[in-house]
Amino acid sequence: MQHVSAHEAKARFGHLLDTARREPVVIERHGRAVAVVLSKEDYDALNDIKLLQLREEIKLGIADLERGAYTDYQSEELPQLAERIKAAGRERLAKQ
Image 1 (tube, rainbow, N blue to C red):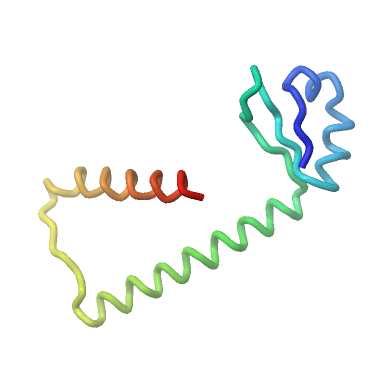
Image 2 (image 1 turned 180 degrees about the vertical axis):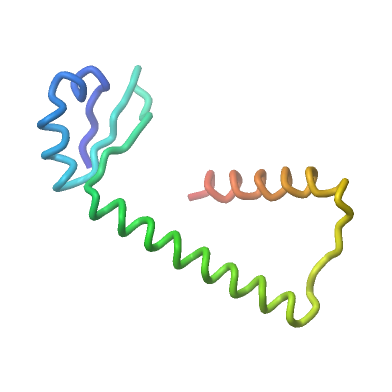
C-alpha cells in the first residue's frame, strides 16, 4: 500500500488513479492518513463482505427473537440505547 501526501495526490491525480487500480493508496494530510483510494473492484469486494456480515448479524438477531432472547424498551429509552450501540461499534472498529 502506497502513501502519498494530499499535495502530491492533487498534483499527480492521473498517476494516483493508475496506482489505485493496482493497490490501495493512502492519502495523508499533515502526516496523518485521511483517505484511501482503491479500485472499483476492491471497493465492490469490500461492500460484498460488509453485506455478508450484515446478513449474518440479521440472521442471529432473528434467531434470538424466535427463541425469546430480547429486551423490551420504552420509546424514551431508545436514544440512550442508540448511543450505547454506536459507542460499542466505535470501540469494535478501534480494536481492528
